[in-house]
Image 1 (tube, one colour):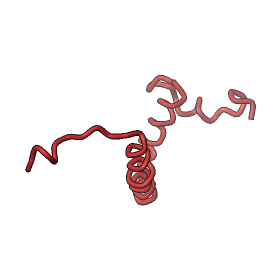
Image 2 (cartoon, one colour; image 1 turned 180 degrees about the horizontal axis):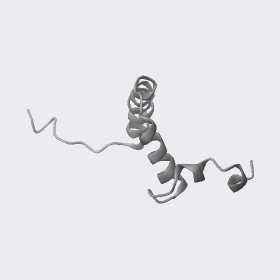
Image 3 (cartoon, rainbow, N blue to C red; image 1 turned 180 degrees about the vertical axis):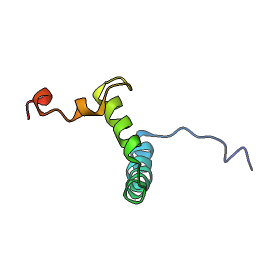
Image 4 (cartoon, rainbow, N blue to C red; image 1 turned 135 degrees about the horizontal axis):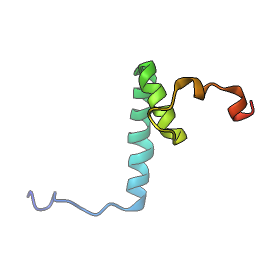
Length: 68
């Protein structure tokens, strides 16, 4: 009986369903209920901007740098 329940190949439709109906709602809920520290947010910001971790925070808020 266990052999019948073994690993089966997933179709693209199955993966899309799992992603849209299971993974995304769970991720959205966790993001709404999880609080991140200020240091964690700045760390993520630096990584996404491609900056070194030693980049001063003041550099991130310069208005002249981004022409804002």
